[in-house]
Length: 411
Image (cartoon, rainbow, N blue to C red; front, side, top):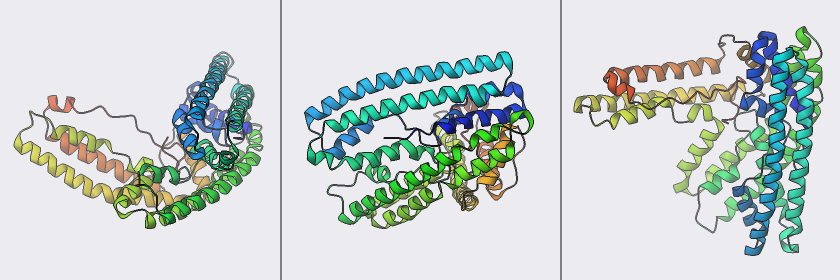
């Protein structure tokens, strides 16, 4: 059901190969970066694992009976066990590749040996996934079988939308609307628009993944030339093409996000807009650390009344400036990615992998404005606190910035 395009596993070799060019010693660490490995594994459509909550959605779409739901749970338990076994084999393959590279410093470990193991993993995952979905389908009566297309669409969204490389490409508007918990029955105009959205999106996803399947076949060439067996020009072109392949999916989402906003119930619009925005630009609109720190400080019992009022003022000023800075950053990302933004993305990724300094594109400058704003707010906050109170501020999460130089997805 979910096509496995294992040729794109070669991205792992190319990405790590890029690290080898910059610093041989850095390759093992780069190979283990979760997001990087996942990107290399899944760009072409290796499906996401079916989770228990996915099964609940599929059961609702198919209108399964109580007995059928129990039987489907048993099927899923067996599926999960097989998937665990496959993932364990994959983990051991990565560990073996790392050890091999540490011993030999041979880049072929990443460009040849590991991709072959990932191809085996991909084939096994496809077997497990197809078998599970086929078994589930055999449980259905004729009326339920007529609804199977709804599950196929949902499965493709679950399996390939997380592979988006453009901002907004990974937003599933069906899930966004469902999470609004709109009272039943859903307005006909909204239900009909969602059905059209799912149909158009499904076609765009299949077209995108077919293009990426073809592009992935060129990835091998990126590891067969240039210094240390790596051709940066071929790599950059392939990454640009991969990114541009997602434009149609992104555009379907952009068009329908505006359309749905106009027809969701008025009391749900603010939540809808906020959710879509945060999913499209997660690196911009996720809750910033300064707000967490300010809110924590405001709750300190040993904070004087004067200092508490000053904290309130710091928060008000920060939130006012934050809205403008965020909107500037989001606009810069959207402008940069209008035609895919692949060239700049690949160049930024190579700079990042090589430890180079940040560039001066509009998006990078907008991000710097936001960072400076965050730092200034934190400095003002800490100036109001005692050293003991500063120590009580919440720990800061590791920054989840995009290594691709564009909007991408928040993973």
